[in-house]
Image (cartoon, rainbow, N blue to C red; front, side, top):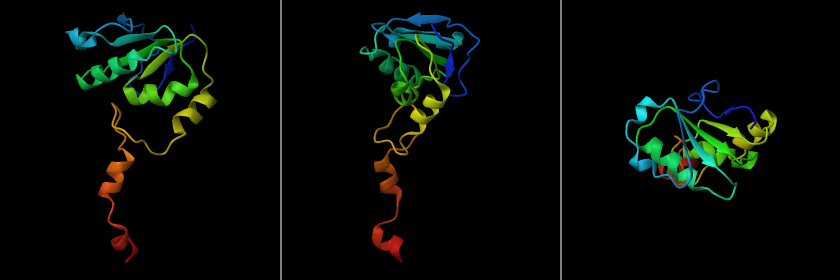
Length: 136
């Protein structure tokens, strides 16, 4: 396993997960989330995306600690991992920081709400003045 890669300021790269959950775990059944500094969610294969939902459920439940994606991960998943609420990852293969930076900055707009604070494009359009007013 490669070293821990931070996605945001909640990451605790030096800390090991207090709890590691498999994809089939129901995170809604967890209680006492605050006592865990780092919760790991396993990605046994890149095709198994159930941990994305688990991360979002944890963030929506108010968990503010480090949610770490662990396992078969690649650079093209970084934006989606971050939007789902992951704050760090421990991939099986090392991730090049330059490639990661480009992947995280690739898209200026998002189209769905997620666990991150990004406003969807439709919400930005709704908040913008109508074109006739903007031209004046």
